[in-house]
Length: 177
Image 1 (tube, rainbow, N blue to C red):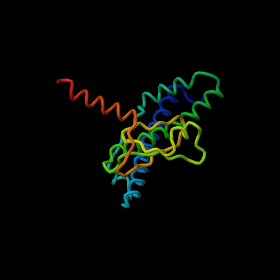
Image 2: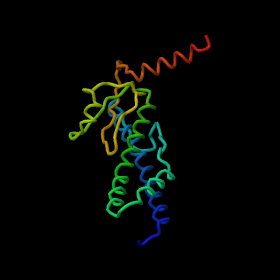
Image 3: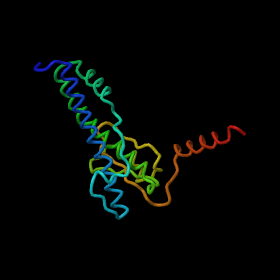
Image 4: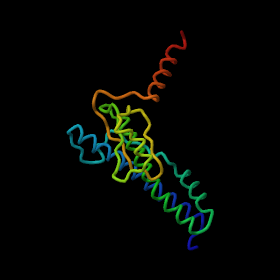
């Protein structure tokens, strides 16, 4: 009740956008640090990043989410705001990390890295440490803190997804015949 709804939406969306920008840098830097470690190289600052991903959640999308959140009882609103402030930066960090991994020519694939308290869904997605091709989408859920671990070896197992991509490429190449 101390600020108007419009002021709250404007300030909150601007703040969340700034947090997302920082999360994007963090995700990219996090990937670069891990890749440098795996390649036995050194990276010391953000300026050395080879790939600078873009924030994927726009300010207007954040403002739209905030407007939806503000409908309801005060306890619900507080819970939803808390969840948005927690989940959104995690998602941006993961997206930037995934974009950086995908842009790295040294990487052939990835495996799922999980924390000690991984949920049942993440354990299922892990598939006993399976190596996925780098263009295979990383599956996550709201609040998921699992991360892709780059595979820089020579053998990566194909998946239904990658085989379908290959069939589509071949069909496009052969459609004029």
